[in-house]
Amino acid sequence: MQLQVVKDYDALSKKAAHILASQIILKPKSILGLATGSTPIGTYRELINMHKEGMINFSEVVTFNLDEYYGLDVQDQQSYHYFMNQHFFNDIDIVKENIYIPNGKAVDVDAECQRYEKSIKEAGGIDLQLLGIGQNGHIGFNEPDVKFEASTHLVNLDLDTIKANARFFDSIDEVPDQAISMGVKTILSSKKILLLASGKNKAEAIYKMVKGKITPKLPASVLQLHPDVVVIADEAAAALL
Image (cartoon, rainbow, N blue to C red):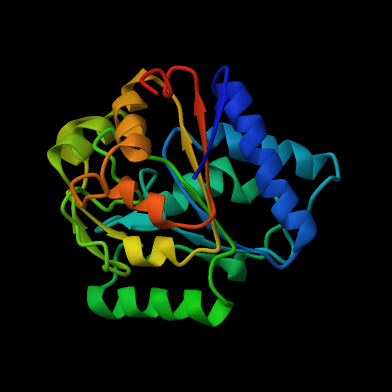
């Protein structure tokens, strides 16, 4: 695991965008795993600027998002479909058919999870997976005590996660309590992983991920086993290291 500490969120966003851009330049048909939440927004903004400047294009890129709230329609402004369009996809030249996000309205959830896994495998696997990290150490929506061997599955969200995500909703009561998420096994199958962490509220999770023991109680700790992980943390998130 390679740790890079940068001064602040802007520096984090630029460095992460440069790594993703290099991946696309070296392999235009890259399969990217993408994350949502507040942390990667700056990275997406930097990538959009690079695209507008003609440095990179996304015409051959295929993307798979980590997760989607269960029960939300693609048009719902709190869905991750909507989030990705607003913060990234609408401003780049990606082919819409190359965008994969779990269907939060799937009637048969098990079939949807199997379909998603099959799509990733048929694409050739994820070349570079972008991750954030929750305050409780979750990656994707894989909460503490979720088995490491899980592939894409339906997750019951912890109260801490619901509280953390309530800032995106009008009230905590509107936050879904389930999500479809890539499993830890799926994430670990990625060829390269890039994890971003910003802010002092992530410092304890980053410390335990890097220095602690590998345990399902802190899902991100399993990344210690992956052969190619880059962690970019700003000074606040790395304060306990």
